[in-house]
Image 1 (cartoon, rainbow, N blue to C red):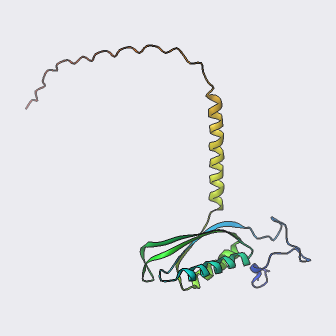
Image 2: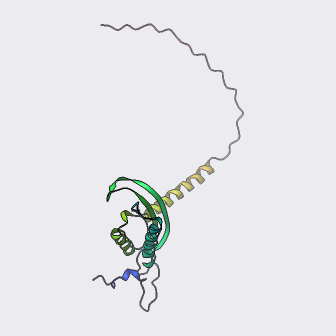
Image 3: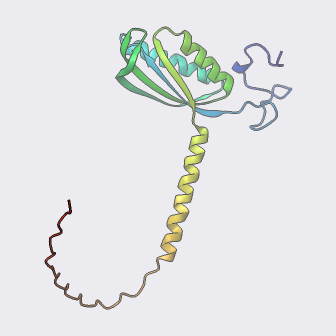
Length: 177
């Protein structure tokens, strides 16, 4: 097999003697940031939806991940009919976890009957890209403010009166047949 014990994703990786491995150490699973959006059937009660969300959060935290945010976006109309439903309750979870935890969460989303649709998107690379763009914009502002040193104000010159526009009468052009 792959050298991992069954259900090995549930326990933290250890380096011999039961000591947890250092982040970035050999054998440590990489933790990444994901957005998981799922749609719950519209006929599910609010309390039941909260229980579902708590169960999915427990799956992530039990696997060594971290639930950053949970946003209940409310009931919305679907673009097309899904499992005979035209609308559903949208939930957006932002999690930080390793690949096996995300796979287990997706498996649970797939087999949970009230969930009619879900999607998982990795966003850590996007966050890095946005941070880089913000840093570049910050340096550009600093450079532009340094170059735009205050210059002494020049004496205002009186504006010349605009010359009157001359309109010449144009001779009519005749079209030849």
